[in-house]
Length: 215
Length: 215
DNA sequence: GGCCTTATCAACCGTTCAGTTAATAACCAA
DNA sequence: TTGGTTATTAACTGAACGGTTGATAAGGCC
Image (cartoon, rainbow over all chains, first blue to last red; front, side, top):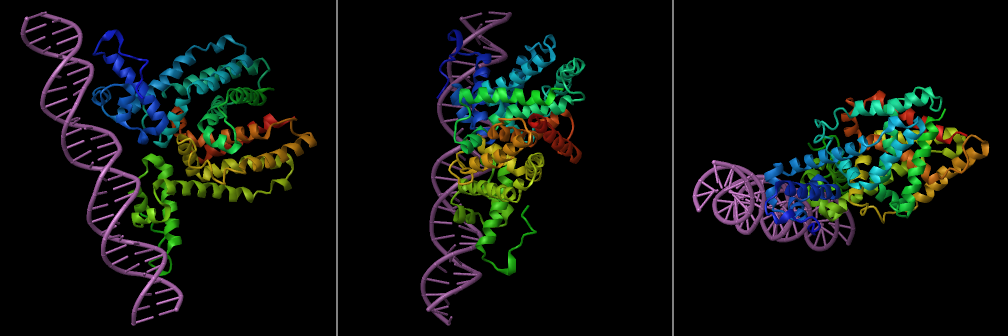
């Protein structure tokens, strides 16, 4: 079903920014639901309400569109991360804020989890050279390293926590819940995307990491 | 490239068990590398060194083979889990054993992670009614619940830990590392499947969970 | 107003793909 | 040895698929 809420603006019949945005949105949904191999370019065009040729005109081919979607996704989370002002918070509060943000972001952007899963099937070869991964290491090292250093100095965090190890664990605890939510729901016989279940999980993750960090 | 090490046994030209096993092995690799949508039945048959018609003869269609592969995968891990004798270990040792087993199993069976990822793209609809998921809840509740109860009674574990919450966290910490190993390796600029990196990660996971549990 | 550029359209193409078919061969039991 | 069943083969089919092409229209600038 085509996106009807996003009509072409101002009765203009040609609008390259609008067409690109339509295609990117439709592709984000299609790729996250079906993966790169399962997604269909005809379906993407239909969902975007634009001619299929536009996909080739703007993005080159299916894989080019997929790369654009991945880059957009990383831009999205980066923009939201930049809104956090963790340095202004006390260490414990900052860490809880970061964990909460990570969990909430994935809760509100389930497509991101699906896209990353699919991209790992393809050995990350579409995102490998992206500027969005370059520098992420340094940013995480700095952001989390700073919180850990301040927490250690204040005596509220255990010493010598490796920021990268910690980040991987925080990401693990937040991400897996959504990446495997269908098999987990099947195992436990209940819908884990239920609002109260996700709230519970969110708090559990904060407690879990907090227990590791507290001195 | 066809599997050459597994020739038909005893110069027999017709062996339905051999043919099925060949197809299941080849399919496991193909589906884990490319996902259900990306896998090709011609490639599966070629890898198995059997005629493509055999796939349809034994498994019905591509999706039937995929279901068989998933069920085999769950049978595999269940068999290994049954070899653990956690009730015979003290609580702390039992928990560490369970965590170590989970991590090691995924280390040795990367295909299992890839299959589960792909199956979640398909909303777990191929495994939903499988006997392998049914009962898993109860088994986990019992296995982990028993360890937690004994640990709480001995005063080495914090009270009131929910076994399901704990299981999801243990699975998270073990699973994500492999499910996202390509994007993580790209971010951190090093190969996270390196032997020393996985050893380090394994120990970190045990420490992480241990910190949460200790009273 | 005309021309050039850019955006868009509809139809088409060749290849790939899962699945099917008819035939053949292997195996085993009577 | 023969006949029936099961396993296997090679070729085929129709639909789906990503991508292309030639044409047309919209928009803007001179």
